[in-house]
Length: 67
Image (cartoon, rainbow, N blue to C red; front, side):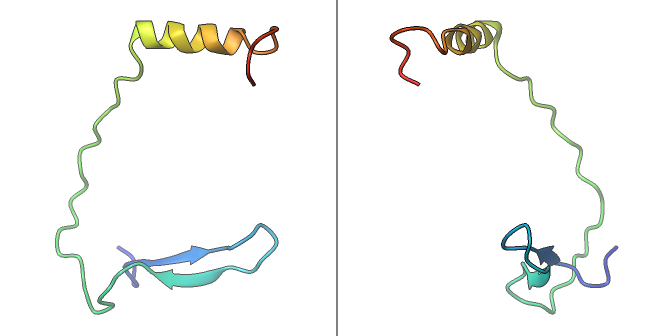
């Protein structure tokens, strides 16, 4: 458990220095439930949607393709 819950380090650009930022509205707040949540696995795209995305991506560079 972190000594400073809600405190994150951020950089506004790749060559800037890190600065700390508190995500919590109330800095005195302490998490009481430290149990880890059970991750929900994403099923991903259906086969039909995957095929549709593949057909769009394979059309790139062809005449008439907008991008």
